[in-house]
Image (cartoon, rainbow, N blue to C red; front, side):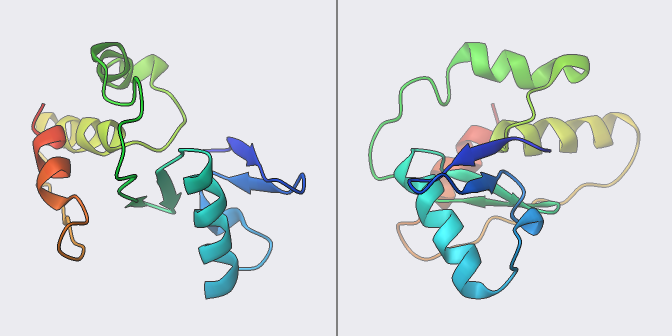
Length: 120
């Protein structure tokens, strides 16, 4: 996944944070904050999806159109999203591969809502 988001200073922030120039905790935290400030609440760290609770409604993020886009494998968007994780897990099941999804976080972080979204 090669999509990038421009930071306030023109710095490019990749969707997959393993592509950051520096992979130290400070750089990752700064990149996540920049993405959060632009309502990009999903980021990848290789195969891991990092989701941040925006504590507000973001228009279209869970729309039926977006859900449909992530279920069309040949044209699936490159952007990190919980729908992409769910679609990949479902495809694995169809290919007879065992699947596990781990949803973790602090109280109020959005684990229950994420679980409901995955089950769509």
